[in-house]
Length: 259
Image (cartoon, rainbow, N blue to C red):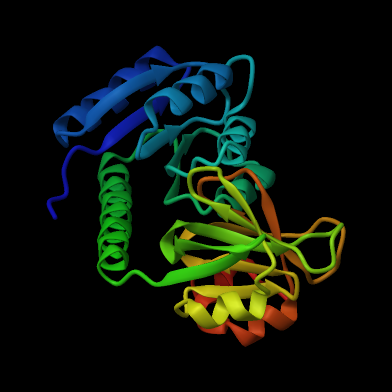
């Protein structure tokens, strides 16, 4: 699989910095799909073009870059983000960490460091594509009981499964295309039909590790977390107990897991 065709969106409100960033991107033979100077346009253009990489300034017009990325994640989109900003505020540095940005580069721009960050982003995208290709070659099929018939679903189409909060023996399966399947098949039975990619994040939730985008501390419950997933704006709870039981899956997010 060749590493090519990476789409880049540049969010920068300074015309001179924008020109420099465009030159660097063009020198690397990447495709600039859009350039924006406001956070509102950042959201709109990301939804339209679905860039692989965003070069993001924090101080944008109308809406700041961090708020823009929050909205983008809420829409189920998780491009590689490289902060390119003049801000050294602790809360901005922390946001770069929380959003798992590839790098946080302060101005004046260090061209060598920026190119290194872009190449790192490309490698991460490429690795994800290879992983997805491997998954396609070894699909696990899940048979769900729905009313009086069986429905067969490919495991790699499942984002997460949750126990219905209103009905004791009902479970809801969330698929990549936005479909919700109600089933009486229990979480334990679903897990037994799947690979190790489907793990418990909570006693009432199974998540597909392939689609974990980020993990953030829960603002309401101490030592608990929420999981952001690709293809959905939903948040899934993650408990300390389940982190320990599936530590190999959550290891890549260890920097966000502080006890």
